[in-house]
Length: 382
Image (cartoon, rainbow, N blue to C red):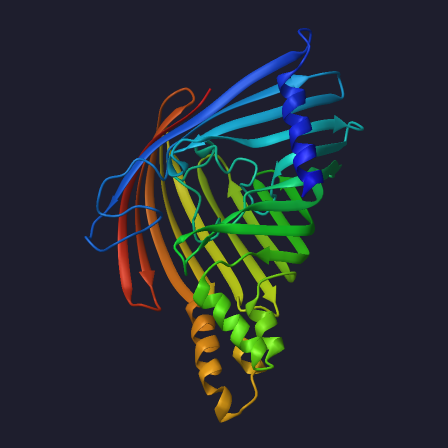
């Protein structure tokens, strides 16, 4: 990972050591949000029945230094409430405008998985209080590497094609230990195509890695892997050991917005091959209407995560029955089906400032449990 850190450091240092003659443009955005669930035993999106202002609160400052008519450097610093407002470098990259239609970016960049990837943290830019958690739930937001973007006019449509390649080195949440553990994705490549025509925006993307790693630390989990190896069940142990795995991520989405009514959807599918983790499918449909400074909207979203068949690699032998139960139990624990229904209101009461309110109902089909979340936020760009 030495190369990754070197590239990112170079972009940050370049931004911080610009000559006095460099033209630096500053901008920023913020969201101050709060929420509370309606039940004493309910938890949703980081909230519980005690009012909290951390999950949806963040502050960010971005500087872009123009070095020439073709080269610029951008660095974005962000402090998130759910990270105790620790200041972190969210973006740090060098932009090369190779031609009028071709651009190369290199450094720490946002993963281009979704329709709203580029503006994911700029909540003011979309109608929701937060993007649908059912879909926007990839364990990583950023990568270190490069992207090549091409823009072209095809008739009345603007077609944007983006290719990316890089690596991810970050922490992920581990439910078995209820804490963050190290994750790493190498050799990540992908492409996306976006078409804009009149009131329509269409997008599709596909991404692939042959070296995804999650460094498990749970003693019970690691003990099961060791026991499987000792019993000669190496294929099953390999599936349990999330190291060097192959994974794919596919997405498709569309938005129609005539500045009066709007509607849109996204569908994503994350597949982990030969792993204890199965296939995760996510989707949402949203629609709304603007009434002057007010925007009323509703969203239906769903997660549908399937269990893997890792236990099928264990021979049908009574001596291996305990292993079947253990592996099958872990595989089933990854399965989930949750429906989300949200209604929200946005009020643009001043230039660059909006107030938002949201009510979300979550229905967990696996556990037959429901949760209700009331949240609100002031969001701005400057």
